[in-house]
Amino acid sequence: MVFIPIILGIFLLLFLITFVKLDTFISFILVCLFVGIVGGLSLEETVTTVQLGIGKTLGSLVIILGFGAMLGKLIAESGAADKITHKLVAKFGLKNIQFSLILVGFIIGIPLFYTVGFVILVPFAIALASKTKLPLLYLGLPMLASLSVTHGFLPPHPAPTAIAGIYGAALDKTMIYGAIVGIPAILAAKFLLSGTMNRLIPKLKQEFIVSDVSTEFKTPNLTISLTISLLPVILIAGNSLYHLIFNYNPIIKGLGNPAIAMLCSVLAGIYFLGIRTGRNMSEIMTILREAVSSIAMVLLIIAGAGAFKQIMIATEISLQIGAFFESLGLSPIILAWLIAAIIRIIVGSATVAGLTAAGIMLPMVEASGIAPELLVLATGAGSIFFSHINDSGFWLFKEYFNMSIGETLQSWTIMESIVSLVGLMGVLILNLIV
Image 1 (cartoon, rainbow, N blue to C red):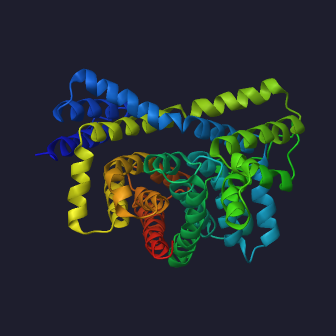
Image 2 (cartoon, rainbow, N blue to C red):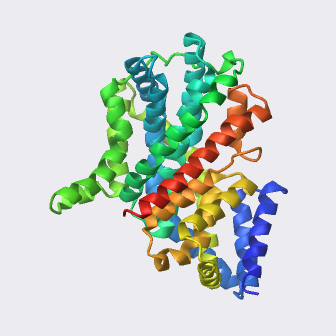
Image 3 (cartoon, one colour):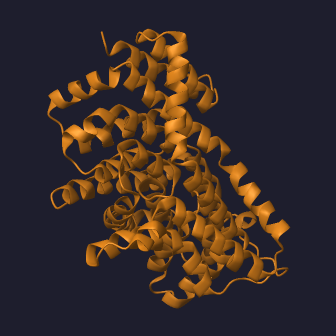
């Protein structure tokens, strides 16, 4: 009987999002009210619990995600992303062009939200395919596999950052483990889909070919572009690596705090990507305001998921779910991946899938004895599995690459599934080591 509220709640959430097409945040709040009351809480207690869950979740994330959006917008608007893309491709040459695009996708994907990275990089791949006469999928698919890894596995992206907060995982370790697991997943997609990339030859859409960056402002050089783009990673992951080798240093520790690291990165971006390029403070602040407004809905979705998690804790449903799944004898890593993958297939949103699965998995995290960072990666891997017609990324790929639904399933969907499955295998192997 204890499972009835959560089962009905998940079905209600799927129904509201998939069939009613109701806003995801509103759907989460309605489901929280339903599960809370059915689970034995009064209406007042349910509302208080929802507020507590939202506060706990957003309290640690607003700074990181807000600054992350600002930095990503500065990188895009300043032409730094374009500079990195062109220079790295030129440096690697035509022979190693796939590896250069994988690196581009990884570097650009770390500070930029997925959709922003997509619309910046894919038109460049289209233009490159037009210039080199190489198949578009040969150029674009490995690059997007790299972008998907950063989206599903690596902070400061919203879903992995929020999941890390729910599980109590360290962001620096999540970054390091995510790179270790993610790189083989990208390469697996590249090699396993080599036949598909050469067999499917879509006709290029000229309207998606990227135009030259505005010459109104200076474009930062490659060194500055790379440094600012990777600064959050350098500070956050560098803190962990430093303390593995050297003695404790409070300054390094402070700079490695995710909130401080993102603040320092934004301030550096304001100067090097804004002021140094000829923009005044008013123009730079406009860019930052636009960046924050672009993630408002993402923050609300994360808030809704946080409320859902707190409702399950308050009603003690999560404890019962944890006990049930533990009795199955399956690895929590596999369970985290499986739950996220099922929700992803039904709902379509990787963010919703990852955060909902994290709320369900929470009671098993401490009892499992598994590093929470690995459970973050397992959940993230499951959240990007089998993208299909209910995922906005599916349609973005289809339209930009000018492909049929069948061709998109054969390429994009399979690519996402390979990255997800190889990511899961990487986490299982890493669990034997750490």
